[in-house]
Image (cartoon, rainbow, N blue to C red):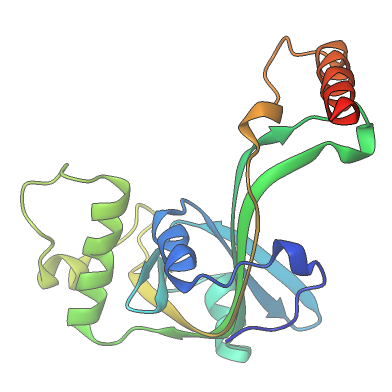
Length: 195
């Protein structure tokens, strides 16, 4: 489900591309509403079976906010480089971003929690552990600060995606200067006008 995006040329509607992007993304920004103020935190996450899964302490500001208002916004964005142009206003960034809205809830099913945490290990440290997580480990795990760990999930109600694909020929690299691109642009304009 989508909501309107102002820049229609950048809209991405390819569901499989969006799903792959979310599965590969490294950081999600979780936005919550703390009374009248936004509260946004970066988190590791997995996108699995149509849900965003996170983990965190069972106490603290995030949990207090969720208990009062479970509405959540998740943003995942990756930058793929800067594209230059002799006209400064035409310099642009290659990126993809996804914004999802839904309600956050605590996962109470031990099988689901274990599967989500295993998926997170598989994503961030693939093949590092020789065995899969046990339910007992998830049940008893405590953070270094002594709090119990909870698994949280968000089922998106709406998802919007934007993408600005990278033009490899215009990708900035250290040492690239505008005069290189001005001569390239001038020669391509001359070729176009001679045809």
